[in-house]
Length: 481
Image (cartoon, rainbow, N blue to C red; front, side):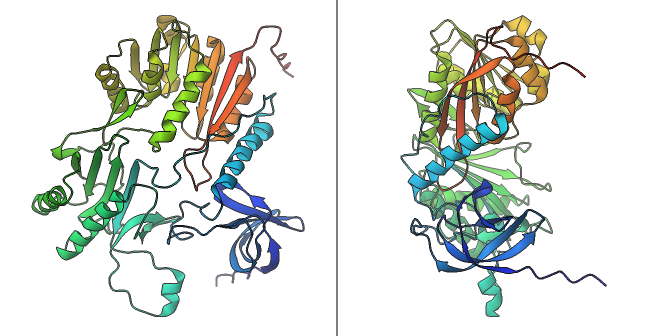
């Protein structure tokens, strides 16, 4: 017989004292640290514990004794259920102060190296409808809230078009309105959902792995161009054509209408053939007169306006005079490489995804940029001593790795290369801090600039400038025992 799980206590009259990782709030009860989602500093609440370890616990707000004075009314009706935008209940000026502190804490507690004063975070002028890309999932098993389950009602219509519930791969929350992208995104999603229901098209069954309507991706560029990619879980060309024709007729403003037939077990389309229904195969973003082609598989920063602010910081930190050789590591579609190329002698970009490198080459050609070179491959395999000998020692290195940070082999090559200046762009200050500690063997941090790309979330970008230390400035090597 299974052991009965011990009932965890209700903590009463608890005051939330701060914010914590992953968008949670935090409080202390005696020696116990308690993490609570959707709390605001100053809330006095009753917290029901869901998990308890020796030194910390996790819980949820059972009821409010007194809401915090800093709380604001969340705009989204799906707040606390969707799992995204976990800071909607906090004023935006408070959000960016928290992100500034997040960067400060990561760099001081993890890197533990000398640091200059951190510049004030660059907040986003636009805090709603700022995303240029959204992805939605169709499901025949919508998520039912606890209130719906407790009501005892029957819910025969379970078709949904929305977002995955955190921790439940087979459950999708039906979204009525998302405030993160232009409202056209909502109209497109709801049109496809209504069309599917009216015409009896099967919504995808995430457990049985079958159904026609599977996912959709919407890109709305700062130029006004619009891309819609429909992903179908079955090869039913007749119904697919009817739906795509209906989309074209209802939304003639779509400039790139594409579809994918994906019958494999996962949702990724990077290995799938993209089929063009009508319009162009790409949309274009614009920045300082440069045009960047963005295809259905391309990576582009999802906040176009803040991407420009971010790239200006990178270029400023690179301090280019016009005669430098620049290495752009993790170049993606070459956006940063092409953005700085006009102020450099030559820029070499390296990226793991071959399709992204092809996009980078196209973006150089479209803009008449002839001083870039791009290479595809795993960074730790491409960037080696032979590569440096062949192409020359860079005057500036720009690195923009994924959330996991840089592989140790890449850090070692950077240290051996001894580029005079390094600009490190990160979407994860914690892994950035870890890498800065390693780079501190030969580099010192000279400038730090956080940038908020994602209002109402805990995510923050951070740009760090490092310069090469002289031999006399470098820390002494530790003796081996």
